[in-house]
Each structure stands twice: as C-alpha cells, then as structure tokens.
Amino acid sequence: MIAEAARRELIDAVGPKSLLDREEDLRLYEFDGSVDKARPDVVVFPRSASEVAAIARIAAKHDLPVVGRGAGTGLSGGAVPRHGGIMVGFSRMNRILELDFENERAVVEPGVVNLELTNAAAPSGYFFAPDPSSQRACTIGGNVAENAGGPHTLVYGVTTNHVLDLEAVLPDGRVLHTGALHADPAGYDLNGLLTGSEGTLALVTKITVRLMKKPEAVKTFLAIYDSVDDCAATVSEITARAITPAALEMLDGTLLRMVEEATHAGYPLDAAGVLLIELEGLTEAVEDQAEQIRLACEACNAREFRVARSAQERDLLWKGRKNAFGAIGRVSPFFYVHDGMVPRSRIPATLRRIQEISSACGLTISNIFHAGDGNMHPIILFDARKPGDMEKAQRAGFDILEYCVSVGGAITGEHGIGMEKLDLMSKQFNEETLDLMRRLKRIFDPAQLFNPGKLLPTGKGCTEIRQPPIARPEDLL
Image 1 (spheres, rainbow, N blue to C red):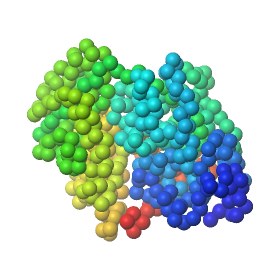
Image 2 (cartoon, rainbow, N blue to C red):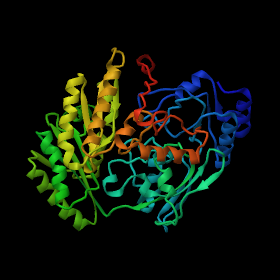
Image 3 (spheres, one colour):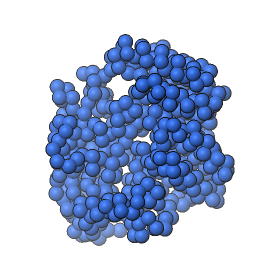
Image 4 (spheres, rainbow, N blue to C red):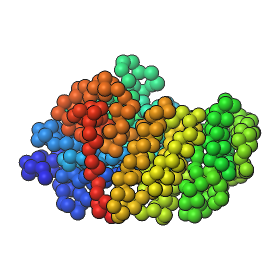
C-alpha cells in the first residue's frame, strides 16, 4: 500500500474519479498478455500531460514505482507492475488531435487504439502502417513503448519507422519533445531511443506519426504445402527473386487446424504449413510480381496456390491470421506466446529445433510468424493446473530464444523484453553493452522508479541468477 499522503496528492492531481485502489479493481490491472502477474498499489487515469507530470513528481517525492499501461495487450510483461506502486492508465488520453493529410501525418494521444487511427484516416485514402495482430485493441502509446510490428512491417517497417515526434514526461516531471516534423531531424535520435524503451525512461503523452497513402492495388495469396521445410524455403526463394511482399506470414499445420476450426477461413486441415502472402503497389507491378510469387511457390513444391478473388476472401484469410490466439484458447486452457528473430535462411532449421524442444518437454508447440523477416512466434501450449507444466513452458521458451541468438538472430522482434526475457539479455549483448544501457537508464531515471525490473538485467549483470516468475499456476486460473 502507498502512504495516505501520496494517495491524497494523487487524488488532488487527477481527481477522485480517476483513481482506483480497491482490491477488486486492482486485480484487473495486475497482468498483461504474458504469463506473469503483479498488482499495483493504485491505478490513476490522467487526461493530460500536465497530470502525468504531476503524477511523476508525486512518485519521485514518495519514492514510488511508476508503470505506464495502454490496453494491456503486451506479451512480455512490460505493463506488469513488478514492484507495485503507481500504474498510469492512458485509456482517457484517447483523442486524435490532428489529421494532417497535406503533410501525411497525425497527432494522437497515447490511448488511441491502433485501428481507430487507420479508420479515421481511411476516408481520405490514408492508413497507419504498423498493424499488430491486436490492432483492434492495442494503443499507439503501447505500440511506441514496445516498438510493435505486425504482418505488414516487412515492407513498411515497425513503429519506430513511423514516429516523427514524441511528447514525453521524464521521471522528475519535466516534459520532453524528441523530434521534428520531418524525416531527418538534427541531433541524437531521441525518437528511436524512446520508441521501444518500454516506459523505463519516460511516459509518452503525445505522438506524431506518419500516415501512408493507400496502395493502388492489393493481391492476397495462400500457398499450401505438404512439407514445413518446403513452406519455409519459399521465403528465401521469394527474396532471391528480388520481391518484397507487403506481408509474408507462415502458419504450421498444428496452428492452422486450430485457426480453421475456429474461423472457417478456408485453410486446409491436412496441410503441413501455409504461407499467407500479400502484394501492394501499382497495378502493373503487382500483377507482374504475382506471377513471380506463384513461380517461387511452385519451385518449392507448393501443392496449391490460391488467389483471393475478392475483398471478402482477403478479409477472411486475414481474419484467420489475426484471430489465431483466440483460436488457440478453444484448444488449450493456457498458452505462452514467444517472439524471436532468425535470418530467413535459418527458418527451416529453427522450426526443426522447435520441434525437438517440443518433443523433449512433452508440450505442443505451434508456429505462426512473420516469415518474411524471420520473426518467429512459437506458441507453447500448457496447463498451469498440472504441476511443472508452466516451468516446462518457460524453459522451452528460453531454449528457443537461446537457439535464435545462436544462429545470428535476436531475442525479440516486436514483443519487447519486459520481464520475461531479462535473463536472455546477456545472451544477446556483452556486459559492456549492458552496462552502457544501465548508465543511460540512470541518466533519465536516477532513482530507478520508471518501470523497474524491466528491459535490463540488474544486480550481477550477465551472471545474475534468474528471478522466479511472479505468476503461480493458481494465479492464472
């Protein structure tokens, strides 16, 4: 619990109807989309940057941790208040402040839902490119915190490629502006520094983003395979033909059967794997590349190559892809979604290694991922009610990401580090690099109050013993 004096000051800052501290309310804010849980002492809902700044000053005065939260859809524990304290919920800072089509940009508050921005821009022929699978729920502030991606980032890039300027509150309550309203601002890249920093350096209160013009033509394809290796090899074959699709997604047989049974999107139940491929651009270029895509798939033994003949067919295929997690929930009471990167050429070997880990731990692991850029998303099915199952799932995830690093990849592509991957940071970076990151954190947050216990290992650095997960099996029921 926080001191009564701090509670009163928070009420003065945001108003009594913008603060929650009853146990039944706090339970709703003790988790995100990961497997870990921890409860805040209080949740506040500011409506402006000045209120966020006041909250930061109160936290500093009373030495209280501060954790920002968007929609809670993150998958690495970034919004889990590991050490309690103040949770800052941005759901009431949800306005689109400006749509500037002449300069192809928008200004939004952090609580704006990702898809709502695209819907607002659509009548004028524009859209917001980063499209996480949770885009119907996730917020742009959360996207900035985690540097979120999505299926179409193969051609458009991740969130950082679309951020022009940030307004952010520092831990001492000062307000910072990071960029300029053009592509190449002078000075250090503070946009890039804060985007993906997971709320450990500052709390973002306003975001200027790039808007994209809708493409002239879009074509969507489904390539069906009897071999996972052939399916994965097609990714390199398409790249070798100098084609960069807007999206290139892979689902293995285990996952696509769960998806099809839930969504009836038209995926074949007997396939070993499928590729969902999308091209965008000028009509003539899309038509030419479509033929090259077909030839690449056939060269890698695709048994069938389908073309979505209408917007309805295209939407149905993407419905299957973007509702995959819900489909898994119909089959397994619990699942653990991971996120790692490998070079495209190592996708087949990585899938084989995941299968070996699955067999060794006795848990089913399905795969759905952004194959075009090697962003793997193994999904580990387990039952937290069975003793040892959660530990097996976490160990399997660790082994998969360790393998990703060993083949020249990375421990995250878009989900962030949060608290789940702290013990893997030393696999990715040497101690000198980690120490530099810690010193940078101290420059912004000397008291270590903003989202403590996230992103960076503490204590003994690369020799640190892994902290046990906060969640217990009974907590997940």
